[in-house]
Amino acid sequence: MKSQKYKNTKAFVFKLWEREVSEEKISKKENELLSQWKSRAEKNLDKIHMTESKERVLSALELYCIKPVKPTPIYQLKRYAYTAAAVVILLLSVGGILTYTTLFKPDTYTANTGNRKVYLADGSVVTLLKGAELTIDKSFPGSTRIVDLKGDAVFSVAKSKTHPFIVRADGFSTRVLGTVFKISQSGKDKSVHLYEGKVAVSSAGTEVSYLKPNQKWTNFGIAHTAAVLSLTPENKSGKQKSELVSLSFNDVSFREVAEVMQANYKIKIVYPKEMADKRITADFTGGAADDNMEALAFILGLEVHKEDHIYTLKK
Image (cartoon, rainbow, N blue to C red; front, side):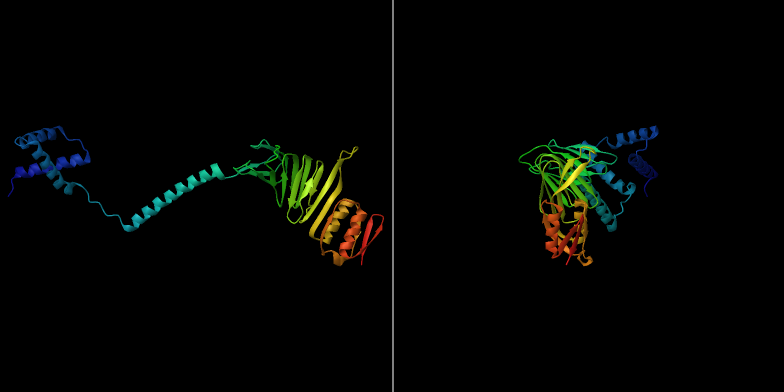
């Protein structure tokens, strides 16, 4: 049987090891005993022997003092893997969003409460009217200066003979090289009013219209319709008098054609009810109401009779 002294020494070593692992402070008395024990144990040992012995003792005691580590279940490993993957994806997404916002996302300007001026990189100035929104790509100005417009705005475009300026609106676009003009969009009613320079207006289903100063392009709120009006101010009232320069319809109902002509020529058109939904394709280049009504009657295969400002179409 082992002596009680041996048991006490072993207990002391265990206790000392626990203190070392738990980082508790060793008492003064324990320090004295440790010093005496160390002096006797190491008296006849060389340094190499002491290092090897210490490593063997520590290795043996480690099993008693260190709690075993439970293996992580596979489902937890998968969960950690999914979590890590999600973090990576999130970081990439955030980075991608920041990169897209900085380098690629178009700039958007909105006139929320009133008119707002936007100064473009090419020197052009856009005055957004209340409720309008202007979108500009990061590549602007580029070889072709393109912007997108919702609502109404006045454009003062910096002149450039080699870099066209194009405003893409709702269903039509305006192309210029340098000029001042206004774009209006109210529901289906679209218009471009030119103040100076020249512009070309294109709309789906119609030919390109070229404007001169004090002219206005409009579709009268009707799809596949295009008209150019000449605007001149009236001296007394200060209002603008409009006169048709050109008018075109592409597959438009006769009812809508008649409404446009009645409104612009200040006339009344009487026609057979069955003709209301007939589709009309026609181009009228200026001229008086009499000439255009004769042309319209010819397209319909009808005869026209005039009395004062009333035009009657008959079979």
